[in-house]
Amino acid sequence: ERVFARLPVDPLFSWLGPLLRAGRKNKLSADDLLEMPTGDKTAVLLEEFLQMRKQGLSVGAAFIRQNASEFVGAGIFMMLWVSAQLLTPIVFRWLIEAVEDRYSGGTILWLAIGLFACTLTGGIANQLQLHFSFHVGQRLRSTTIALVFRKA
Image (cartoon, rainbow, N blue to C red; front, side):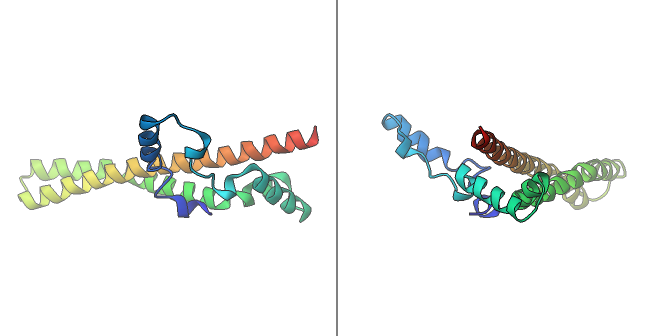
């Protein structure tokens, strides 16, 4: 199960509603929690990492290859966020100029909608980028801890 397949579920916390409803009615147990994605389980991560190391990859290269889709996701959403951050003041300036020059209401409305779209897109992209980055961090920590305990 790869990262983009879980995109609608993870960052929007849509899994949390049923869990809260169950917890309100009864005491929660481990059975109430959703199953961890197979690709995030420590045993699977460790096995993938060790296979890459057997292929001759360095530690860093193995970590990067193991988390490549998450890095791509974080990069895409970071580019969207940066684009929105760059575009927002430009659209805002156009909106101010349109109001000062008394452009038609339709032009001002479209610029206001554009400003809203830039702000909304930037906010969502920022949250998704952070989600992907934290997910990579969790996977790296899990693999590293497993390697340390395996060595001990």
